[in-house]
Amino acid sequence: MLAPVLGWLQGSALSTTVTLDARAALGPNPGPGLVPGSTGRADIEIVDPTASERLVAALPGLGGSLTALVVAMLLYRFVADLNRGEPFSKANVRRFRLISLAIAAGAMAVAGANSALGYVIAGRLSDPARLAFTFELPLAWFGAALAVAAIAEAFAIGARLRSDVEGVI
Image 1 (cartoon, rainbow, N blue to C red):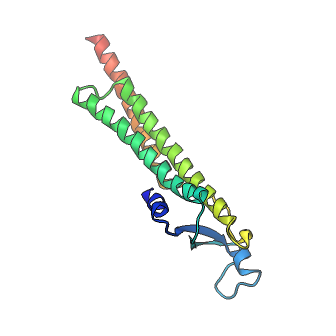
Image 2 (image 1 turned 135 degrees about the horizontal axis):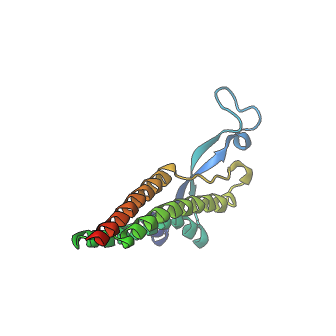
Image 3 (image 1 turned 30 degrees about the horizontal axis):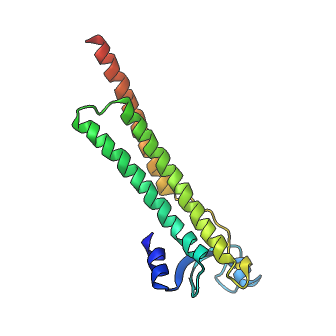
């Protein structure tokens, strides 16, 4: 997240990676071993980026950082409940559900920011058709969100059992 901002303060070039459409970049007969219609990554350096390009380049890192901050804040509150001896409270179930939602929303925000960055950079290319529009969702993030949602459901069952035991005593 800090690299685009520090580069902006130093006045250096903006470096990023974009996805190119091989069909548009290579033409109809790309040569042996190259498949038209496939996509590939390319490193691009913009020598004199505008302020909007710098801001859009910072968005993916900002989305990931905000997601990490929300998750850390919710986990801190969960650990505080653990220290009080109340792991199976309804508040902790809600916290785990919010963590799962934050991870999934953060994944979509980062993917959207990366797509926006590609769109902004496409305006700089001499042939914008070479840049493939991509919206790549990070599956690892969604796997983590699903795992945390499963933990939330386990804690929901624990909270129900806890309330049942309190009612018996």
